[in-house]
Image 1 (cartoon, one colour):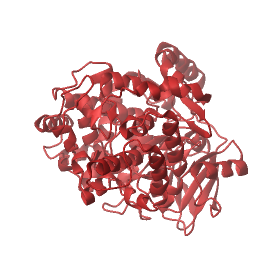
Image 2 (cartoon, helix red, strand yellow; image 1 turned 90 degrees about the horizontal axis):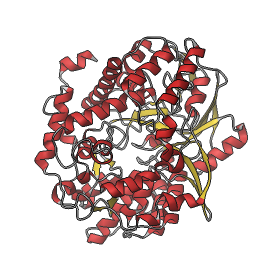
Image 3 (cartoon, helix red, strand yellow; image 1 turned 180 degrees about the horizontal axis):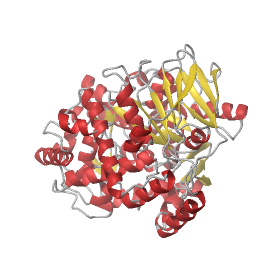
Image 4 (cartoon, one colour; image 1 turned 135 degrees about the vertical axis):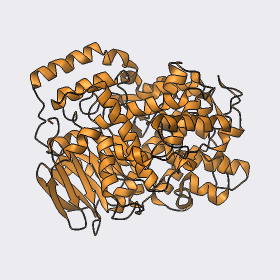
Length: 586
């Protein structure tokens, strides 16, 4: 198939060797690329039970067949490995331009194996691959390290890097690119740090071959016009994901004080309108049709974003309404190379522990100077940060507070309150990488579109499956989440245009189901079952006090009902296990 470079760059860091090999096109036909194909490679190549921070783990940077084409919103890169935070499969997608650079260098993917003997970075330019010393970069924030590399090589190059959190193997560590873009969840930065790899500098000067390029470009332009991509998503250009703040506030799913309640009467003090008063500039990712990136400057604080998740966790969930503190927290987390969700959730859990007198972590709700300082301490594992770097699951098992430890499989909750969107509790529970809103975004149907009642288990298994299937295809193409009107038919047409092979909506749906299943198969092999598809006790025991969902809590039997519905749709047994017959069809 065209659209692919038919080339994998495999790098053995231990031996400092780089070699190329053909892409497994038989796998690509079943898993497409990016999310799906990276999981397939990991499933086939990783031995069960390995330590995610050992040299045996692999870190994969995977593009898709649309990467580097004129298809809008197709510039993201999948980064995957076994998660040190959860022990599950983990794939993230990162924006910016690094995916295009890898593809133009002639590679569909870069697979990193082993471990460097001392801190270093990789230089990749077309077929030139060198191993460079990172002594002067090690210990520096991600922003400073990237700036040093750009000063050395120039702006034609993309830099993929880690901050101090990745170097200390903090399991909340993310991977940064283009300064403010992150592969944020599951500790992929720690995997990169465990390999003594500070950065990858990459540039490519090639192109991507697709069949009948003139007709393809013409049709893609027509699709953009027909699909009203820009018109339907002007809110994304205008304010990025700050628009979700109002939607979640109105819908009753904006969490407050460590998910103890929802909605915030002070939300207009830090909403998008307030933040964008400090707008300094905008940018988009490669092949971007939307341009959601907003650069803010508030005093000495400079940041791209903050996105909704970072606003919510450092805002109402932390008992804070100061917009400068929110932006500062985002800036520090990015520079330290920390997942703003996991690190923020851990601090706000510690705030509640202190407030309740269960254990004194020295921080209370609203104490944002400490919140920001704790981010630095977590990243460097210094002082109280060495404890907090354990994350909510391990800390709650050590000190108590498990009832309000907002996590699944060791991954902390994103910022959508499930008692206002029951399907979200299911989506978090069955997500392959732990609590995640990017696998199945239930509020879109239950709250924003109001296509299905939110406070009932009825139909939620099928709803979450449909959303997960759609996202599995979309992220295997590595198309940005903001192309919200994308459907199976359109994705099939785009694949046909890019590869020259005829794809149908049914083919795409089959890929989505296969990707969900192989991720589950990976986790099943690691020992995960239905007992790990959980929800925090807070959702069952405490009713919301405010907002549209006031009085709502999720009955445990309703939650279990939703789980069984989901398993049944996928053909799994009541323990969430894939039957051998189903595994064989993969």
